[in-house]
Image: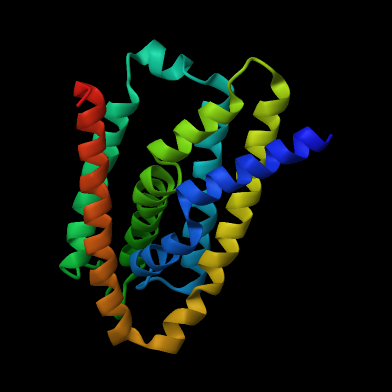
Length: 210
């Protein structure tokens, strides 16, 4: 039992270090700054649910998915990095899709856009990125069912913690004001673009064994 608890703690800390949910909060706030509280909660729940499903699937199947489709972690890193870079550049330019008096059609489109944000870049590659997936595959490897269950359970705990960080981060918006959030949005855009670039570099290094 003690070894299992120690393993569970190691898995939790591994996920916490690679995901760094505290650092993700400003990115989440920047991506959802034009949404109301209900839509923000919708994005948070949907992105975390998708991230959980992705990590659970990779924890259970391991390298089978990459093998059957002929994929590599390096290719995943490069693709995810390019996505983050594009999103980061859009944030850096202050791009947003909200309007002050949206029509019913605009609200529907906003809902669809919110779903898009929940899928990418939040669920993948920010929450369930190459590092998180690799960490899950590493901890769940070995052929025994118990490490797999512990890995999935610890990521579920991480998702719950991240959800509360996302939701209560809304108070941060009210406190700092819209203008300050605009500055943070551009800063987070720059950071996101740099993270994306680093992922591409790491993917290229891994692909060519540099």
